[in-house]
Amino acid sequence: MAILAGGGSIVACVAVLLFLVAVVHDVRTREIPDWVSVAFVVMGLLVLPHGAWGRLLGAGILFCLFYALWFVGGIGGGDVKLIASSSLLFPPLQQMWYLLDIALAGGVLAFAYLALRRWGSTAPAAPYGRLLRVECWRIRRGGPLPYAVAIFAGFAVTALRGGL
Image (tube, rainbow, N blue to C red; front, side, top):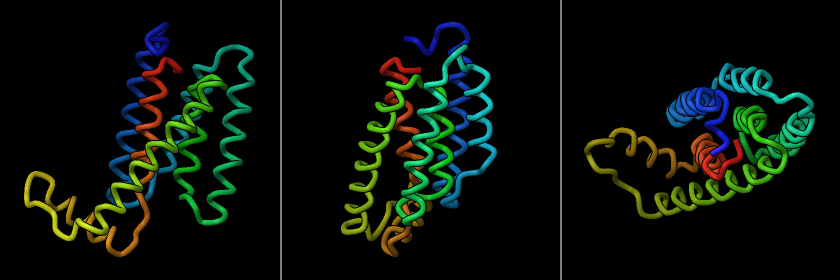
C-alpha cells in the first residue's frame, strides 16, 4: 500500500488521530476544531511531493465546491475545511475518489439518521446509552449530521484503496 512507503505510516497515524479528534468533537458538539484542519494543511504541505501542484489545485477546487455548499446551508464550515485540508494528502485522481467515498459514506450516515428518526425513539442503556439517547434527541429535532464521521470513512476507504 502506498501509504506505508517512506514515512507514510507516520502520516497515516497522525491523520487517523486528527480524524478521531474531529469525529469525537463533531459528535459531541457538532463543531470541528480549526486546529485540526490547520494540522492537515501543515502535514499536507510537509509531505507534498516536489511539483505537486495538482494536489493544491484539487484541494482548492474542493474547497470552492464545498464552500458553495456551505453558503447555501448544505454543510458546515468545519466540514468544508476538513475535506479540503485532508484532501492535500491525496494525489489529484484520488481526490476525486475521496469526494465520491465521502458522498457514499454521507449517504449511509444520512440513511441511518433517517431510520433512527423514524424508529429510534429510545436507546439502550448500555454501553453507549447516553450518547445514543442524546443522538436520538438531536435526530428527532432535525439536528445536523456529524459529517466528520462520513469524511473520516471516506478518507479511510480512499487510503485503503492505495491513494495516500
